[in-house]
Image (tube, rainbow, N blue to C red; front, side, top):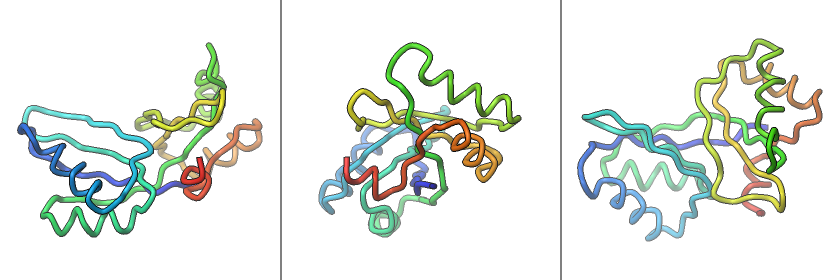
Length: 143
């Protein structure tokens, strides 16, 4: 029920982001979700890609610091309150959210949101009990 997220640490300088996306393009690696958090000195690029192991390898070869983390890919209704439902399930269970961001891809009238939570196993349990669909990497790649 977890998806491998790639985090790349980038200097906050012009062209650094495009260097990473150029590496991915040259290796035919598709980005399904992307987010950047920045400070004055550096940024953290977070991505879900179709070939995470290969992406890590080619990004490391280009001398960028990179690591992986497991996140939850959660399906929500793409209408007012859709995201709130999943957030309320986690809140009622006392599961803290570290961050979230959305996918570029979607599944029909359903939005896909990535969650990084403090208690992943508990989050999976309560979301599934509430009827919330969680995606695997294979399911995301098939969209």
